[in-house]
Image 1 (tube, helix red, strand yellow):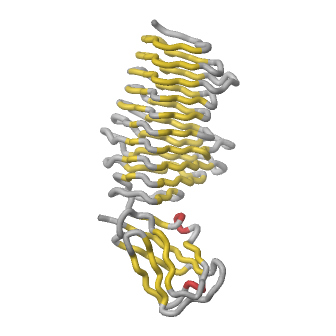
Image 2 (tube, helix red, strand yellow):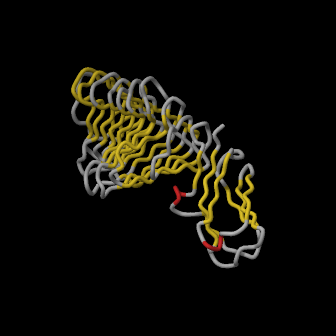
Amino acid sequence: MAGSDVVVGTITDLSIREGKVGLRTYTGASHVSRVLVASQSTAGFVAEDAGASDQMWSHLTAKEGDGIGYWIKQGDMEISNCRAYEYPVGFQIERAATLVSPKTWGIPEYGINLKDNDRLIVLGGNLACNNGIANVRLRVTSGGSSINETTISGTRFQHENGVTRHIEVAVADSKCIVEATISGATFESGADAIEVTDATGDVDILFDGCYIGQQSTIPDGVKFRNCHGPGAPVVQNDAGNNPETQSGDGTNRYYWSHGLDRKPTSVNVEPASDDAKGDYHVEVGTSTITVDYASAPPEGTDNLKWWWNAEDNR
């Protein structure tokens, strides 16, 4: 089948080649599955914003085209087990969407490009750009738009030739924020897990329980918790904004988890409240940091506070 324009309802088992747009949908409750689109000049698949929702795409392939593999302009879509390769952009997400097990490779620009959007959920999958810029870009360009409900879970970020960062963040408007949680993901060595290229607005991103193969610096607004791997050496309490806080109970010893998967090579602890000052020494274990005072600090509620960080640079 050559070319296409509008699809209504359900469509399965098609091969579409050589056109401008392989497959374009407008209606809600559309289910598109097992479709191959190849050699399209603008986009492989397009979901237009027609005021509808609840579309589902599954087991699709966008192959060897120009422009965008999957262009999502309609909200509340679920895109499951879809592949994009040799398109400049694999998935262009402009409305709320869920990607389940996406797969990209041979992408020269961005595997997933999230622009001025409020929500993206990525579950699993494998992302690889070949001579590309980044596997995922989170970008805010206009006032009033924010990325604030994005989660990425269990996804593998592969490193291929030319990629310098797995996730790129740009917040070009001072009134906007990019907020995201990345959990249980794997970031291969050879490229930094994240780079903030424009921080005009606010950045609030948490990596939780991820394998970090490489990370040159920790950008402002980016936090790592319970991560491991050679690129995740530093763990700190909310970048210094919220110190470890406990209540003095008349004892000499206070401890908390440092979040690393083994004993850190170095730890720094500094009092952040007057009651936490005094004669003390710090003990470091495989899972905790302990502050041991020569004399018990004053009793009180939330009166003991410490700034801290832990580093594993092996």
